[in-house]
Amino acid sequence: MAEAAVIDGKAFSAKLREKVGSEVSRIKTDHGVTPGLAVVLVGDDPASRVYVTSKGKQTVEAGMESFEHRFDDDIDEKTLLDLIDKLNNDSAVNGILVQLPLPDQIDSQKVLSAINPDKDVDGFHTTNVGRLWTGGESLVPCTPFGCSLLLKDHLGNLSGKNAIIVGRSNIVGKPMAALLLAESCTVTIAHSRTDDLPGKCREADIVVAAVGRPEMIKGDWIKPGATVIDVGINRVEAPEKGLNDDGSTKTKLVGDVDYAGAAAVASAITPVPGGVGPMTIACLLRNTVVACCRQNGIADPDL
Image (cartoon, rainbow, N blue to C red; front, side):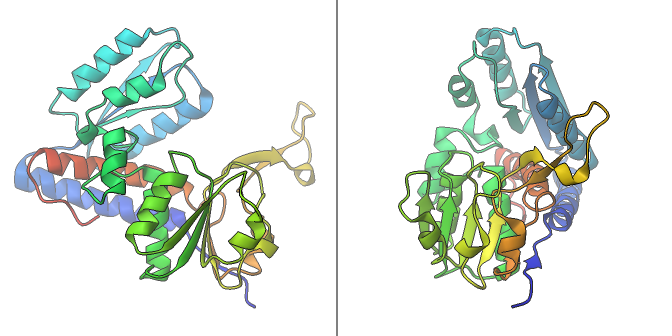
């Protein structure tokens, strides 16, 4: 069997960001409205800082307003909640994103629940969760929504497909299941307690790996011809790359799937990096434009 086709999330996300930019221009011209995204960062976590900077850059590149609010990690909960209230009532802000994790003195769920659900572009508010599961008009978590776009672009109609999601998080696993059910897939959610996980994976036409364990899903777990979406991003030591200047072993990024093994069996697979990762910010921008349209009585864009 030929090696699996590579599902290029980097190329797809670039096209999506281009479409978002076109919609932003149209909304500005036709309605005199500029979508705005507010991002809140607490503390100085290096990965979060890089991610927030990237979000701001891509927001501006799409023609939207970017509002960044950065705080030291000793901020008290009331100050953060007061900011959320202010952003909820600011008509220039259509989307609000609080970068996780938050410091221990702050109740993350309380903060996320304080965001107006119509501005919750991360899709984590319980109102949006309920809307998603009941088929309502929701803002959908960015990573699973990006996965669904990649699947539909590659496979077309998903109706009738057997899908397994390995991982049951609120951020990826559960909303991914809701999205695939909405596409009329038969969905299994698997996790650390699942009996015969390899056997269940071998029954699936679609495998979505979001478990956070490096290369856990092996090639012989994959049904021949299946489509594999690898959400995992794990940094592991790579002795084959040699040593850093300080003598430590160099590292590399791998997914939750053994890429080489799975690619020999699957019909298509997302790489790590360059697969699902780039889709997350692109879908965040998409959600912000959709939120803007809904808040201003404009028909949802075709994104």
